[in-house]
Amino acid sequence: MKRNLTLIRQTTMIAAALLIPALSGAQEPGQAASTPKIGVVDVERVYADSLLGKSYASKLEGLENDIKAETGKKQAEVDKLNKEISAANEDYQKQKNVLSEDALSEKEKEILSKTRARDALVEDGRRDLERMQRSAQQQAQVYMNEFQVKLRPHIDAVTKARGIDLLLDRRVVFHASDPYDISGDVIARADESMSGAEKDKPAGAAAKP
Image (cartoon, rainbow, N blue to C red):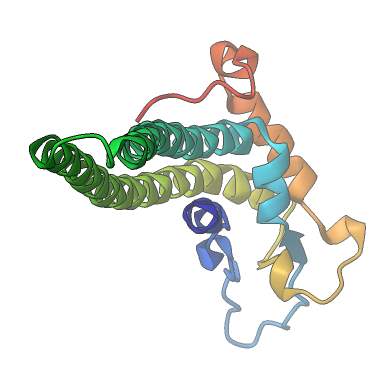
């Protein structure tokens, strides 16, 4: 189960596609080269702190919660059958010296039937959860793609407004002073773009896919 949740969480790491190495304004022949203005954006911070990012984090949490709920449901069904098997075995041991061979045979068949049903339930549950996990991973990737598409215009707008020629992903920069970091501006712009309903939505309210 932990592996399942880890796989979904891994999808929340934003791809380096949002790295924007775009130098603006090609130099004319004979024109003196100017030093490009450099900026840095921390996409993971934008994801964690912006309303847009939080809305998608909530959706991912919903996928995790669905898997947890289904796992708990299937485990409860298995536990119920295990208790029935245990009770049947205890009853068999208590009565094996007093019951007829036919009666004992019937109890043995009952125990075997319940055991097979339990084993089938475990196997079916495993396959169902694997399918659910694959579907959740695919949906998580859809969410992350949507987030990137919606975030990109805000990064582009801030980059243009700040006159930045070269924008780098914070993860590939060893050090950058605060004036170079445009993450706060990107968060503010992304938050402003959210509708009133989206802003008022509780953090834990995840839309069903």
